[in-house]
Amino acid sequence: MEGKMGRTKQMICCVLVAALLLIFSCLGVDGRKQSQTTITKGMKGCNMYEGSWVWDDSYPPYDFSKCPYLPKDFDCLGNGRPDKNYIKYRWQPKNCNLPRFDGVDFLKRLKGKKIMFVGDSISLQHGQSLVCHLHAAVPSSNITADDPNIVRFEDYDVTVIVSFQPFLVDVEQEQVGRVLKLDSIKSGQIWKDVDILVFNTWFWWPSFLAYDYIQDGDKIVKQMDPIKAFRKGLTTWANWVDSAIDPSKTKVYFRGTTPLHYNGGDWGDRAANACFNESEPVSGSTYPAGLQPEQKVVEEVLRTITKPVTLLDVTTLSQLRKDAHPGFYVKEGPPDCAHWCTPGVIETWNQLLYATLL
Ligand SMILES: *[C@@H]1O[C@H](CO)[C@@H](O)[C@H](O)[C@H]1NC(C)=O
Ligand SMILES: *[C@@H]1O[C@H](CO)[C@@H](O)[C@H](O)[C@H]1NC(C)=O
Image 1: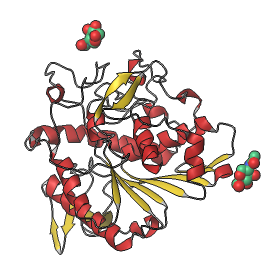
Image 2 (image 1 turned 90 degrees about the vertical axis):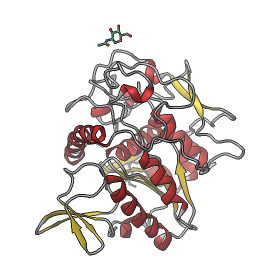
Image 3 (image 1 turned 180 degrees about the vertical axis):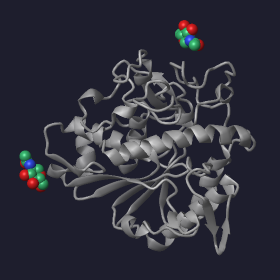
């Protein structure tokens, strides 16, 4: 799944993440209150997103080194990361056990279907991790990837697609420059024919590098508070879900936003040098910095949708994994505490996704 385009995009994203750091430190930490949300989905009688990371000798759940679709950028062990503890943690919900990810069963359940991951480079990582996890289950089956972003498991008639659309809403080149259009979501035309859609957006919203202007209704502005713009853009997406999705054909997920681990104070260790020397998850089930303003927006906007949407609520469990970023062990580009090493955390997102299909 490497492709020149993919790499360029990932590099752009690295630059953006660096810019984000500055912006985040300017935004400060207001609004980090625990949300009152009750959006929990998944297994009966169990909030599978509440729990902690436990050591598991049998981990990682499969051998990633044999996956031809694993991008080198986030293959931390391949890039020289010396500590390997971070691949040995399993997510343990407080009140139940998660089913093990069963790739063959996953493929059989999805027979004849397309699953698409839409969002920024972390959404691409999410889809790529699923491809590797499925590949490990059926390594000798016929898998084709004429386009690196579209991987087909031919023997099961299952297609995994990743689509880079970091705002979900449109960015269009116009005479004045690149315009982020809060009310326009043309890609919806492509999405509506997919069977399972896993959306995410957030990281790019605070980056003023990604666009020159914002169009909000008939106003064109140079800048807007990122949270306000995010809320408007996400609402456009929510309205699209309500108007375009046929729930008997298409299942819609929103994957919760994930943290940046550049600020040790967030996990109660002000002396920490970002995520760079972290080799263990935060213990327990709560993250000292709590929920972020963008997570509140996600929960509020999702609640306005009348069609069924599942929140794949990976935010807190990912916040706890300050140890699972590439840090210095990226293939190229600046040290990275935003993307995730593969393997590491994202297999758990897919294990949770699998649990919602059972
Ligand atoms: C794999 O699937 C493709 C598409 O159906 C087909 O053209 C190709 O012949 C298959 N390859 C093998 C080795 O079965
Ligand atoms: C990183 O952690 C190791 C092990 O805990 C420690 O020995 C080393 O001094 C740390 N390095 C830095 C730069 O903090």
